[in-house]
Amino acid sequence: MLSIHQLARVGADYLVSRLPEGGGRKPEAEVVAFGLEVALGGILQLAVFVIAARYLGLVPEMMAALATMASYRLLSGGVHASAYYRCLLLSLMTLILLALLGRGLALVAGGYLPALALGAFVTNLDIARRLVPVTTPAAPISNHRRRARLKQAAYLWLTGWLLVIIAGFYLEWPRGILASSLLALAVQGLALTPAGFAAVGWADSLLQRILPLG
Image (cartoon, rainbow, N blue to C red; front, top):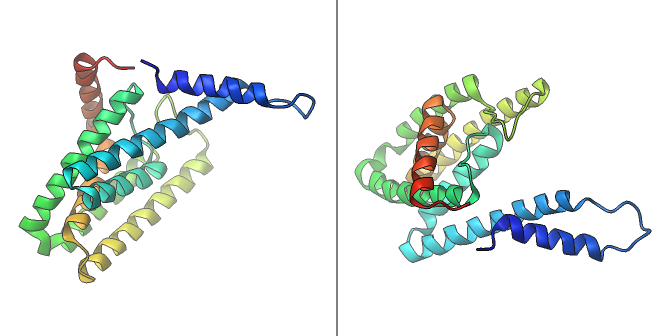
């Protein structure tokens, strides 16, 4: 099976070979391949998420959970699965579960969403204070100034998220969307902790045994 990595490498070699000679230093194929791999991986992930959401009838809830987790993760950092396709499968299963639970939470406790959102905000604010930005060997952040900026940005993001959820509640947005976003933030916050790292590692190992994809 042709992997994203192989496809990106083939595309990079082709693009670099098509660049005219004498117009300056050509970019290295490895650099172009990395950029293509990130872009292709992101496009494939989004396509899979949208197709699954439409098939299951969970588009609003899954997209709310995806937007919440993806945007906050840009600032907070966090752990990844050890291979692209396992990361894709784990993310897909997580989003489906969050969407289903979000619908259930909206039915059971929809009237308490502002209070629940405030609890999620306070909890994640404490996690951000202690841990954000979370680094991994694959994505280290050693610059203290950059770390401080990311932490401040995470505080602002959390504050903005709380205001949006409360405003959405009183503007009578679909409560399933709000609840899915709330649960997504709770899961993303947990994933930043040592327990969350351990849980992702366990799920990654399980998927590796079941589906040994690269």
